[in-house]
Length: 158
Image 1 (cartoon, helix red, strand yellow):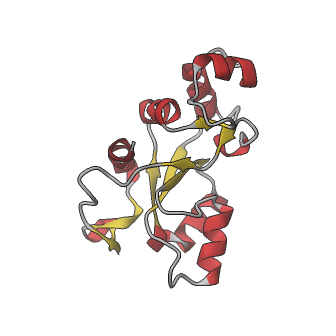
Image 2 (cartoon, helix red, strand yellow; image 1 turned 30 degrees about the vertical axis):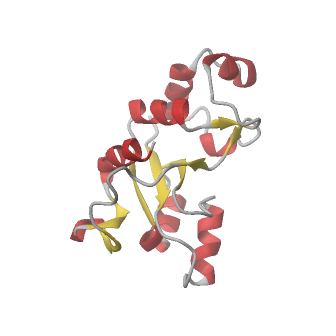
Image 3 (cartoon, rainbow, N blue to C red; image 1 turned 90 degrees about the horizontal axis):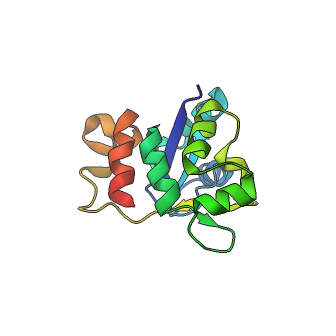
């Protein structure tokens, strides 16, 4: 079972050093409130630690991932993702099976850009951020690692 990380960019590019912007572009997080789903690997964690003041991340749950796919993921034509599209394009029965295969490591969402518009575009969180985006999550802020609390933030941003 592969652990999947939900990663969201929460700060803009102004006054950010070039190497931060470059790393964020490698993660496909070019604009505010863009989100991506990656498997938890040492390479990804190294990149996340490098750009942690500009993003927040944590382990995403299967039901939150399913909601994210249904509500926010778009096909390359701009339509919402449906069971019929997943069956036609990916040869997978439905969205539930797709989520299961993502967690088993059989498919990777970040490699499916020929079928989906990536990154996933989100709204600012309903009710605003609970802390400052200039402080780490541990110190009543918003950026950095937040564990399974990322699921609550993603639901507020859908």
